[in-house]
Image (tube, rainbow, N blue to C red; front, side, top):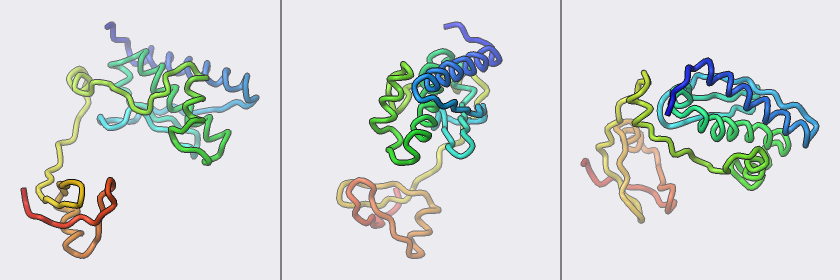
Amino acid sequence: MKRLRIETLKSKVDAKIKWCREKVLEKYNHMITAEIRYDLSGTSRTGVCKYKGNIIRLNPFILKEYGDDYINTTVVHEFAHLVVNYIYRYKTRPHGREWKWMMRFLEAPPNRCSDYNMQTVIENTSMKVRRKVARPYLYKCVCREHQLTSNIHSKMVRGQRRSCLKCRQRITYIGMI
């Protein structure tokens, strides 16, 4: 796969946004503008849409590594969020049927998550990755065991209550790993 310069990729992003904007204008008779920022880093998010200010934040490291695939999926994904928010004003689920319909309308797969290999992104770029946080404190609920960090454990010792997101039962301390 040929890797392009970031300036070339940014112009391709602009062209894709323009194409999406014109398609939405044709159907809804409204011009949706978006400020594109290339300031995301790390491996947990490929793109973010901020409704306030119509801002789309993209990860330049992943853009550089995956190029056209990233533009045709992630960029369209985030723009679709802006359009659905404009049309329905917070009355839909983030990846609900309206968003899925908009993704199909913009000729992109309506996938919620990307499947980029982040290890290749890290190896082929100058991306810095945070070290993994130690989770030495073991807690349990009805359905499984949870490993918590020292910060959360100390809050629990001081009386904070936490529940499992899956079974909704309170978690209790078992011991250290």
